[in-house]
Amino acid sequence: MARWSVRCSPAMLSAPWTDGLTALGVRSSTSMPEVRLLATESSSTVRPFNEIPGLWKNSLANLYNFWKLDGFRNLHRIMVQNFNTFGPIYREKVGYYESVNIINPEDAAILFKAEGRYPKRLKVEPWTSYRDYRNRKYGVLLKNGDDWKTNRVILNKEVISPKVVANFVPLLEDVGLDFVARVHKKIERSGQNKWTTDLSHELFKYALESVSSVLYGERLGLMHDYIDPDAQHFIDCITVMFKTTSPMLYIPPSLLRRLGAKLWRDHVAAWDGIFNQADRCIHNIYRQLRLETGTPKKYPGVLASLLMLDKLSIEDIKASITELMAGGVDTTSITLLWTLYELAKHPSLQEELRAEVAAARAESNGDMLEMLKRIPLVKGALKETLRFHPVAVSLQRYITEDIIIQNYHIPSGTLVQLGLYAMGRDPKVFARPEQYQPSRWLRTENHYFKSLGFGFGPRQCLGRRIAETEMQIFLIHMLENFKVEKQRHVEVRSTFELILLPEKPIILTLKPLQSSR
Ligand code: 2DC
Image (cartoon, rainbow, N blue to C red; front, side):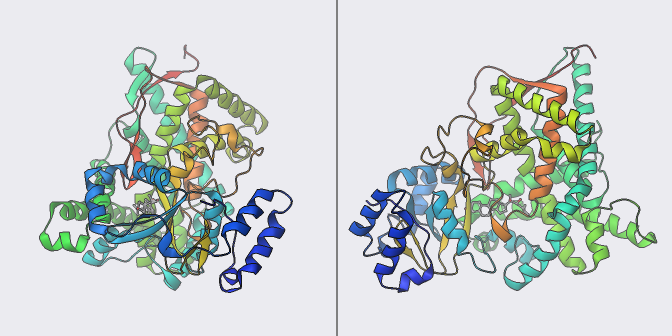
């Protein structure tokens, strides 16, 4: 089978194939003569959509197989297996959803160039069903078309533009310092000069405290010993919400709702809990804002900024703020947990990162915003974590024009998925993928469409800058204060619960760097 890929314009599809070949020949004649050879041999006819390999003919049988393989929890590994069986492109139909799957960065580039003006990803049906059922508005995550664009453009300015990120830094730094103080206290109380624990609960609180402080400009107080039971309930609801979503990707929620199934009821209860907590936070800020007069002295948070800007309806603002709050807990905390786990496995890398942070601190007189510009290896570590342990198993788009990938014609309107987890572990894409090497993200290598942990383009993760800043600040503080260690080598795999997460608890030990404090 000829294996090559090249960027194609839609014109190449309708034009006589010689045009395509000329384009190819010109592009590759100097660097890759073998590509031209293959092209003349086999691409005189681009192969039709129906010839893409894969199991797409019997969707019910596939659903049954999927279920037998425990596919609801193994989606990522099944995708890897499918790429091994069928090659870099395959078609699939499981239950009611049909897609073309790809794995190469060059093909991802073709996909994202065909995403159109209103990029659309796979609809997470249980999430829209809940909102329809409870009569709540969709936030920017679930909106499409013009409505999506208008909201997204306004939100971008308040959430991911570099200008506002500077406002987040002092807020996030406070949370980071409180987290460190809390760990020191735990270590002291243990009487053993170390603290061994499953950090996930602490990280959930850190993440919720961080995202809330950015959104609301106010602290929830989750770094104390006593924590508000409502906040804990919110955290638990998010976990249940994700967990109950994945089976409903394949079994229509409308059906489960009519059957009164427990899965649907649990899902509704989880979202109810999430919305109630978010509503309370939003209401609180809204009331304060009406009492205040004049412009605030300090940065008031994303919500207050949006309300004062007065460009989106209050209902639209609430919907997107709720999504950011719900989306900003498990995603960052799990990424941080994986990162600490990798640092514990690689003590010398840990030292290297610590040295980078120390140098950055010295050079920037402790100014956090300046420090963040001087920690390329720490940033590389986060990219490396997202490569090996991505939050999202895949990125998807409904393409808005015909494209050619791996010499197959894919018609406009098709759902095309990039297997992000599979790509991150493919030795053809990343040399020695099993090794954790933050340095591979330094400028020496080619990163063309390889760093996709937050997606790509105008539909990429809206919370990206909050998440990145929050995680960088966390790592800086942790590296400056503690050594991370782990017990014997135990390999922890990922499990799919809509997002990918560790299949079992990760136990880590934190030791203070200066042992006599
Ligand atoms: C799950 O096959 C697997 O960022 C499906 O913070 C395809 C799919 C579609 C949308 C993806 C989802 C997967 C994983 C979780 C994602 C989601 C879009 C946004 C969401 C990637 C890959 C996430 C985690 C958001 C969640 C915010 C929400 C709680 C309001």
